[in-house]
Length: 123
Image 1 (cartoon, helix red, strand yellow):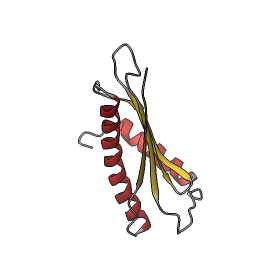
Image 2 (cartoon, helix red, strand yellow; image 1 turned 90 degrees about the vertical axis):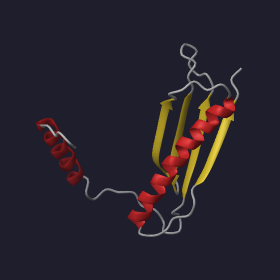
Image 3 (cartoon, rainbow, N blue to C red; image 1 turned 180 degrees about the horizontal axis):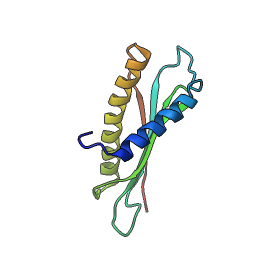
């Protein structure tokens, strides 16, 4: 944003052309089914080389998945509980942001998101 280049202008025009071509497409949700739910999971020491864990989460709105993120964690966790705590904190931040965004789009206050966490001990 501080130093836009010509390539940024070309890319933004490309995105706008794509959006214009998809103006009639969209997701439909029943009015009573506007509740966010989230599922997260992580493995402890999934990579034996650098000992970092892999985690992921996805958000659903009704029966549709609207956001997801698989990622390798930036720090090394010492236990499965710590891995799940790291993922839960990332998910909570994402849930707050997503709830505010969707609240503005639907112009109503959404219910509190349901967060479902799972862990699996690596042996």
